[in-house]
Amino acid sequence: MSLPADPTTPESAAAPRIPKSQSAFRTISEVAEELDVAQHVLRFWETKFAQVRPLKRGGGRRYYRPEDVELLRQIRALLYDEGYTIKGAQKLLRARRARGAAEQAQPAQASLEVAAPAPSAPTTARGAAQELRRRLAPILDELIELRDRLQLARR
Figure (tube, rainbow, N blue to C red):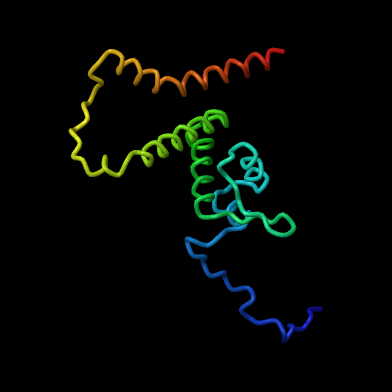
């Protein structure tokens, strides 16, 4: 026996939602669905990546800004697609943030100057060594982390 339809419920109640604006804030469930990760993973990432700071409203509800969602998308790509560890992803994001801050800190006058094309390779041995160190630093960090994990696994 089926119940009669409720006349107070509109027929369009099951209609799909209207997509949100790109600048709209998102709930944790929306972000989790968009990034294809569980909600508890997003909450965990908040503890590991200080840059992710959603707004928290009454009852602890989280609202993610568009820039938070973009950062979470980058974190997901680093961890899941590129195989970075959390520690490696943290270092990479810190380095990107420092590089971006350094670029913004340069005086406006520098942007008006016509720059000579950058050489394809460092012109000095010291410059070459610095470039090599910069490129090898993330690899060394990951190797150290892997060594530590192996030592823990042997115990």
